[in-house]
Each structure stands twice: as C-alpha cells, then as structure tokens.
Image: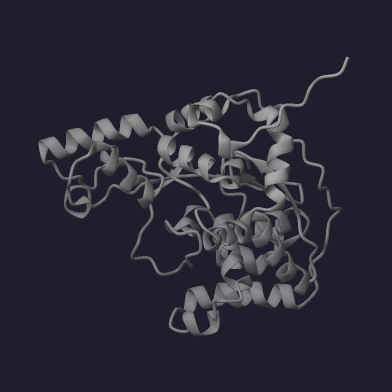
Length: 307
C-alpha cells in the first residue's frame, strides 16, 4: 500500500498548525532544513578546528536539547534552531533559546564536542586534570548556585556554568581554548587559576599522546523519529519542567509584597538564565528593577540531565 507524503512548509503554516505537528513525522523536513541551517555552517567551521588538533568531527544529530551522551562520539542540538517560527514558539512558551545566534551556537557546539571527545579518550583519568578540575565521578547536581565573584572559572556558555561540575569546568575550558577568536594567553594573563587550566588543555592536546578508545557513533539514546509528542506537547512539558508558571507566581508575589530575597536557600528561585528572567518580567507586564527586588534570584537549573 502506498502512502502519500505530505510536504510540510513552516513558512506557509500558522503557529497553531505547527503546534499540532508530531516530532516523529518531521524528521525528513528537519534533515532538509539542517542542510541549509546556521547550525550546519557553524558545525563545519568547528569541525575544521577539531581536524587541526587531530580529531574527526563527532556525529551531529537533531534532538530537543543540547547534549552529548556518555560513551558515544556524537552531539545533539535542539530542533527549534532550524526555523524562525520554531524559535519563536520556543521563546514564547519557554522564554529561552539555547543558540539564538551563530556565536552562541558555536559556544554550545565547542562545549558538547569536549564531552564527545571525553567519550573516546582517556582524558577523564588524567591525574593533572583531576588535580586542577576535580574528579568527574563527583555526582551531578540538580541545580547549582554560582558565585559570580569567583574568578577561578572561564566563561563560555555563561551563567558561571563551569562551577556546576568538574566535567563542565573542563568542557567550558576546552571551548575557550579551541575558539580561534580568543587569545587566552592575553585574556587570562592575570588569572593564574584559569590560565593553568587552559594551559593543561593546550599541553594535553598538543602532546598528541591522548589514548583513543573505540569510536561508537551509533547512539540510540534518543531518536527524534521515535518521539510521538506534538510540538505543543513538547513545549508544554518543557515549560512545566522549567516551572515557568510557578516562577511567575512567586515573582509576582515577591514584587507585590516588596520583599527582598535573602541568603536563605528556600527563597531562591531556580531561573534557567538571565534571558528567562527577562522573559518572566515581560510576561508579568510590570516594570521593576530585578537588581533591587531579587538580587540573589539566579540559582541556575542544571541542564545536562542525559549523562
């Protein structure tokens, strides 16, 4: 029996029509969109940088999140980066786009490539790395409270993400080192701790003594063609997962009562990012100074739930 293939064109569809589409039905379209996407162009650029240090590029696949599954030489990126209307819906429902422009996309790719390289090398067991960055066997936290005055960590993705776990500290440092637009010798000349970390990354990758494991690219951890959710269901689940509506209620109550947040941990509101904070402010349609009302609001949720 022959089935007619329905061609989907986001440009000609309304937002309501897009929301009703199932993710599993969109794989062919996503693959076609990827061929002309900014993600592909940025990935090819960074692939050349990886080639220059002796590594082939990992496999890149479409998902709902940025991540690199442990044990596989592959990285995943969120599907909504493939079209402006999908970006709009992501921002409308969730308030945050991870990869809103080329510069940010490259930051995520460099970061995830570091995790992918960890899966095919012995770098996690390097004693110097463990001494400087800490052991990767340390349990991952559900959330972390960054210390913005702590200068012992580099900034790549932002939100002081390197502070969340030794493995993220390594990935963020690698992302800074492999970025050709950053002169790290100059940028961190007055920061001894960060400079030592980047120098270790530099030494390990230039020594060409990294032991390689068998490369496994065929990851079945997540396949978007098996995701039966509609785009709307995904967005609502993501919104609930991030607690957007709950955060709005807490924030509104705090503003109306004019109470300031204190150092009590139970008063911290787990905001995903500063962009999400702006989204919450705008959705409340109220003017207020976030620095005055909620100076300690940013307890960031930990992203890498796939490891």
